[in-house]
Image (cartoon, rainbow, N blue to C red):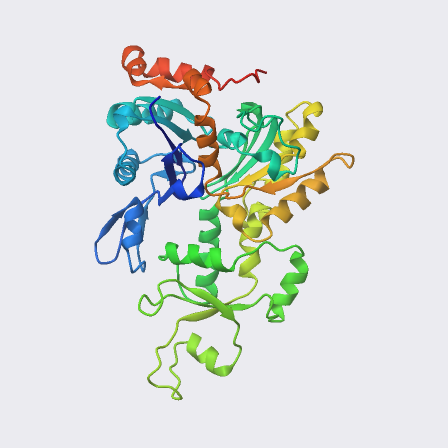
Length: 428
């Protein structure tokens, strides 16, 4: 059988690699963007790693609000990454992810791209959360292993919270299949956190509105979710060193990435933050540094209380229960006991605890609530696709060949992807 390439198309990054192994080492992660630096150079996808100065860099991202809307840019990124992977598309099967309940035109655009532009031999198009059901979730939740571990079966019931760059989706999976009417979406993702952080820093210190890459790094380095919001607010006001830190911006000479360090409240530090050079060390290079206090936990808090930024949506825990309420109560316990977190935002310290606390407060007292973060929440979807591809009988049932696409056309392919489902003895 032809080799299978698995591509998880994310708004922030593209995860791609062959299904010969589900090790993290074989997953190629590349920025899903076309970027232009202030010296006029253009970087496509993984070429961004060659850039040494991210100051005033502009980004064009093909994926907006979870959907591919800039197809020329997406094709350019995929072209670059497929060359790196040395992919012979004419002899390669493809598993590629899309957003749940995507508009018809966008799904057909995706089919046209993979069959007509890239000429893949066969394709299976599916939603990203579905592939997570094929990972080894039993060991993650400390459940007894299967009698035959070589058998690749999807998890019986899995609640996937995927919090990425552009939004957060909550998807209940039954035997690996999404229950579409129960899928819920929160229109807050890492991009919104970065924008909010940039706004706060610009109001309190100096403008970073035109520095999205730097702000994203600040978010990754400094932000956390509070377990006691009011107490942490008071600690930040009192300049508690456990909350308040200094952030040193990159200068692209001595260091190319910013970093946090203990807060220095001294007069000299204040003058340096104001840009006043101190005579004690006239030859020293002035650092651009500013303090971070309640911004560290106020920013990610909007994932759980969107009303803080006047967004008329519920937080993650409440949105999960909106999804759960559409299901028969008989299914509540298996789903509440198997909540899986994936996506870059789940790496924020305190995220797992906040989700578990929020769900526990809303769940019936007699039900068990278990929340786990995937071993690698960035590549978890890709890993699930690799495990799924290892079942060749299953793949034969779901793949659409290029010849079928050419014979029957895009409308037929759309219908087939809607009705074909992975089957390996778990029909429901």
